Image (cartoon, rainbow, N blue to C red; front, side, top):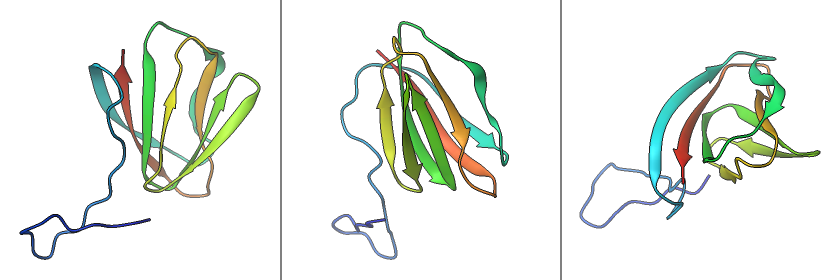
Length: 101
């Protein structure tokens, strides 16, 4: 994970999770227990999801492929492609999920 300190800050480390990704509809923090996630049947919808892992590791299933996200990484999911998200480690994973247009 690459930290940066903004100008004129002291004792301040930041990790940029994402840049411009569309219009934000809503956002949530999710706590995924080991083997937790969902939905069990992949789903679709009109909006996209921007997922960022704050702790742990997640597996994002998109169509027949998957993406592994480690702490400090983000991924934009096209909501029109069947998808689901799962904890990919033996401890709780904490994710930020933002719905965007």
